[in-house]
Image 1 (cartoon, helix red, strand yellow):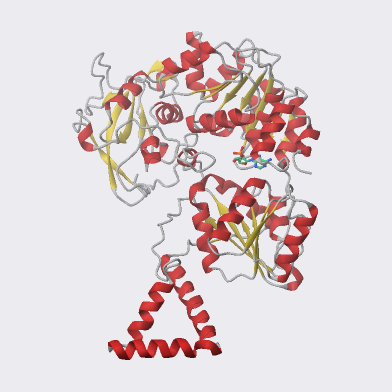
Image 2 (spheres, helix red, strand yellow):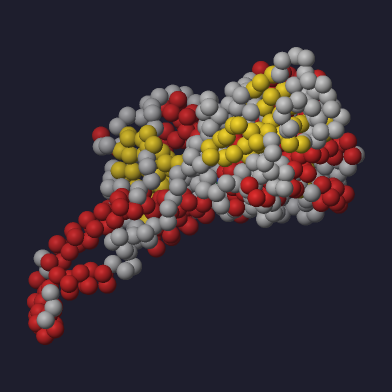
Length: 633
Ligand code: AMP
């Protein structure tokens, strides 16, 4: 079984080997559909969101067709954010692990251009980057697109929302007309369809169809958790849920073993079930689960196909399934033989879209489950302890122990309750009855893409791959502080006030600038999360934008050089009043300024958290505003 399915799809031997090493058991639906199309050199229009396996859906076939000897870019991937660029580049690197002489280069704004220039000079078969910086390289003639065989637009709707669509079109027009093109988007707004019609011609369409299916008798819940805290969250859920048998679904064969081992070490009788195990072993494991010799099975979709065990009271989707069909299939392993079943879905903030889509398919509401608290875990452990104690009290062989303790108590004139407490204390050291577990903070949900950057800062293992560098924004770090203070503030997630300062940008309506262009440039070039970009007012010749007070010098310098519509922002602190440039003073605008209030720009990144009064309940401990700052936490 296993990666044979990938082989059947026709991916090349070295790429297949990498997929096997990664423990992918079978192609996800988007991969099964896209791989043959892209391998065949055809254009593709895919409706797919994060979590469906879309990166591999284009990376595996395109890598299968590259020429490792040819060092000028053959595959170009455009992404809306630097985080996604890094993530996609890492994915390419891992899938190309066995291709000799392979290089992938991420290029994005806000990073040292020198390194990118050197990288391009050295040569890379794959370049992944954000549109602005790609255009920069095109203008410098450091990026040669003449040999591009395939171009991928990833998260096209996000690029549209961030105001990059013109840049994308410009890059598209510079790639060879005969090159293959693939566009992936979670949604297909008219502007994206127009680009597809213009540049993708007779593209084959791929989308994951989902029939509505009902899931009665199953109580469905979800829990939002950051990727790196999933294991702790799982242990905690297992501690407090009253379950009989349980299946935990994960994506890879290696995770089945890893998680089963970790659960075993934490005292849950568990075993792995995956396609690498022989039929005999799999049957033995299922038999044990049926007989109650083990309670938890950690499985992949393939291995759990058709599994029918009545005592399964719980299904946990530790990794979200690729599509809604398999969600329904997975949770159907519980609620057997007329019993009640429970399904708990773990989602990371960027997977919220998939949650909503599952709800639509199953025509049911999946209720949020709050992370079990220390007190809940404690109650549960105490209950188990006292139950065990009651059982032990019934054993007939206690006489000798009672005599010993009574003698000890009398000789030392002790209180029996004190002795019992001391024994209990000794007994619970391994598994404390009053645990102080690490605080797992449920991240806020991402309905709009708002949290995705933060989440993407963590790699697939949940490790923080942040680079050290910029100072946090703080009141004291900015010598230009605080003359042109904005009246407006936003609030971080703890409700702390984030003071804002109004800045002036030397681009305006006359340059055909839209607020979304400004948000896109600031977010990507200066790495400032869009939720911290406040009110933008467009005037004819310039604009103003509210940003957190205390901008570090290097961010300020980056923003001075950043360009929108080919014009440098040349940012300065807005002097207010006459609204004229520090140098090159321009007259007051004749037309009324176009005011865009935070949160209601339709094409700008949505910031649902921003309330009408301009305050945002953002979750921040310190006053840190750049995406990097956040990642450091
Ligand atoms: P994506 O939708 O591209 O962001 O991928 C989501 C996650 O699924 C990534 O962590 C991939 O490594 C993982 N993944 C993609 N394809 C497969 C597969 N066929 N089997 C197991 N995991 C996969």
